[in-house]
Amino acid sequence: MLFIGDSITAGWTKAPHIWEHYYGKFQPANFGIGGDRTQHVIWRIENGELEGLRPKVTVLMIGTNNSANDTAAEITAANTKIIGLIRAKMPATKVLLLAIFPRGARKDADGNLTAVAVADAENRTAVINAVNADLAKLDDGVNVRFLDIAKVFYGQDGKIPHAIMPDQLHPNAAGYQLWADAMKPLLTEMLK
Image (cartoon, rainbow, N blue to C red; front, side, top):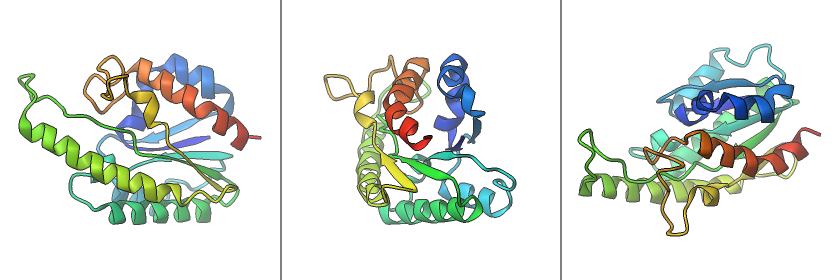
């Protein structure tokens, strides 16, 4: 199996015991790169990144880094293109398309939560929610499956707990455990 994404995907290195427990038997590869946006993933695929690979399932989550400057339609179109490229390069692979994870307001270097950061988080959340609604429509029930696990990252107060995402963007080991547990049923079905 193959994971494609940004720093959130790359961050599985924070939880190697969870990665190994859930995915080790599937010979997983992690193609997450910090800072990547949709256009970077497109470039990587168009320039040979998937050559010679034949995973049964590819887990894809990309777009949070686009959410400050791109429209929901642009992010959705890029994800659609990425799925098409994956399916063209690896026709036997199934794509597990994850909804872009939620993100909260991030503190500045001095540890302060500014009005600018709150507004940025609100704007990004609106874009991400619109993208996720569009991405859900790409689920064809066979080769592309969509999964939104955002609810596992919210506390009872409707906020993202720092105990799961300390910087309000990247999960820690506890967050990766939630991700693995939430994805397991659909992933298991897709790997049959």
